[in-house]
Picture 1 (cartoon, helix red, strand yellow):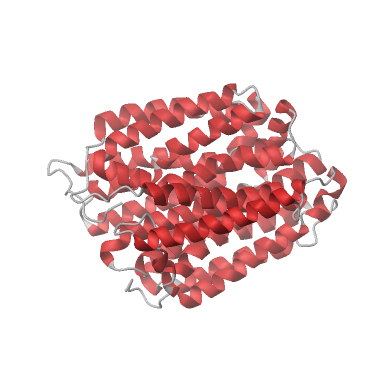
Picture 2 (picture 1 turned 60 degrees about the vertical axis):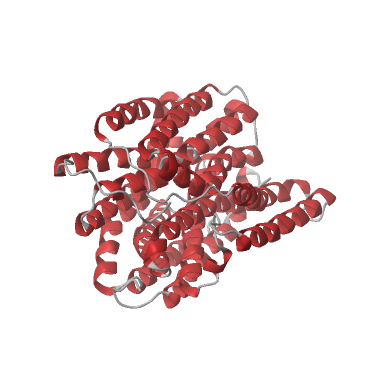
Length: 464
């Protein structure tokens, strides 16, 4: 995504600008929701399609892997060919693939449809944000709009398990995907009526080699973690996978270092402020998705809870994220990113520590407390990480910073599912609580890592 865009049309009234924001937030809610809503339905999907933990991990990660790999290129396509056009194509692809997910007769069909869903989602997240920025030329109004945008994304991620639990309980797991259809139709109609077309004055060139290599790096990294516990970490196929992952990573760095307009310039990650923010984004979403998966498997498979009951235990997480996201934005504007980053790290680490001794008799109050703490930490994390990333690069590369950070978030989501799933793979229901303890240590470590990110962030309110 390029930082230089055409100004908003002069006849765009305040009401229409905020209507544009509402339409874009609707699409963003879909993207975030589908990253987490499937988690609570995994046991029902596994029962319905007769698959185990490994297959269920792919049902979640096929979506986030493709989404993470294509975010930057989708933004570049929209800058070149028209943001509203690409946005509407993304909605259509997302809606059609959601229907394919709902009708999937087998795991393979579901995984393939989820991957296509990720393609559509990649055309929504960065493109919708570019539409909002273009529609609101006033910096203060734009800042308020981005604050609303961030809150909606955080709410959608945290609310997914709650909504998913209610849908699975009432209508079955296929309703997790049917629910997208009316929202997509509404967004398509509203975007055609209210969203103006816009393009970048100087669109970025498409980096096809970089795109292919980035997708391969992400897929191999997560695939190794999903398949390792089942194939054997030292088996010949896994050793070959390690070698391929290493070779592709080296190839990506070499290719991107030599291109004039790379998809991701590896040298940017060498800047402590920016690199720290990107790793912080990965850590936050590893913690969130590990929490959601471990909670779902423990409560439904080990304790026999319904999907709705398991989803309701995540309400404190959703509430904490929703309340603290705008407060975090305020703290960033007044005191800079360090204070909310320290708060985010502390709360996430405290939530993980609550459950490092999890067993079958752990009380519900402790589970709810842990979820609330992690939700508060998640709410405090997003605004300072984005601010730190943008502040770590020159002003004219703000779009690049945002795109890379979004990619890092989705990669963290996929990584969290793979790591947590690998830890409990093969565990019987009676063993699940004990097997998940290293996962809660992982959540705690992610929180503590944010302390390091906070130390690299620049103090004060200035971004540069």
